Image 1 (cartoon, rainbow, N blue to C red):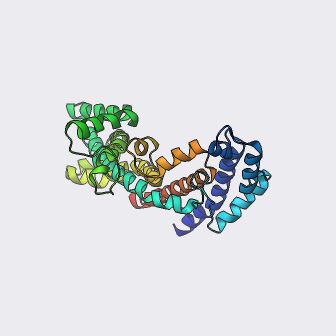
Image 2: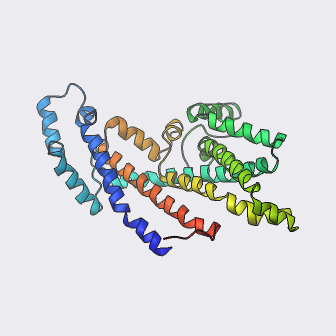
Image 3: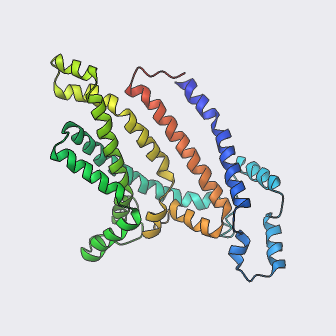
Length: 309
């Protein structure tokens, strides 16, 4: 297992280099000029060119990319174009904790509700419990964040006046309740549907019927034979959700005024703040790679037949 993990991590620098190159090229040759956006449409062309020269944006592409990679290897991710003089590393570091806390609450909600819903639905096929679970799943998947967020704000903040409408006070604050629900509804539905489908497939296997024919308790069959084998696809989904812990939520953080990574990404995209966009892209790539590695290593704990080569 250790050799497998080291080999997977060995490819991480090459993956980050490829992601950095593609993102950097899109920023250089894509539409929009960060200097033009920052200084307005009616700026003097000579002033604009002088600012571009001071920022090093008039150098050839390969020189800019090589300089960025070299500085990144030394821990320097550049300076924000939008927030003048603000280092990108410090700008992201102040916000990543907020997005991670919010995403953790959403993931906790998804696991706590989605997996039990799927288990109940799979054990009571074609009953009202199954139909109710499917209805909840379809409703959760079909409800977009930009629609659910105003509904919750109107009901809990305006009508009941039990929760604040916006802001952020930490993971245990009342401000975290509505954003966590908005972010968690979709994953709850996805986990419930995947759990139901996976367990129904396992329940029809021969070894489950054999275990029951031996007279084992139904609880023992479910815990040691059904759930252990049926949760492998669920761990894959949870791994993808773990990778999104530092990704932030564009719509949710913008609507609720949360100072997280998602809101920063939206502001950076509109401002053509390429150093921040580059850093966010690399950070998300690292988080998904590490999360997928953790999920792959967990397969061996769930199924002893899995071997790593």
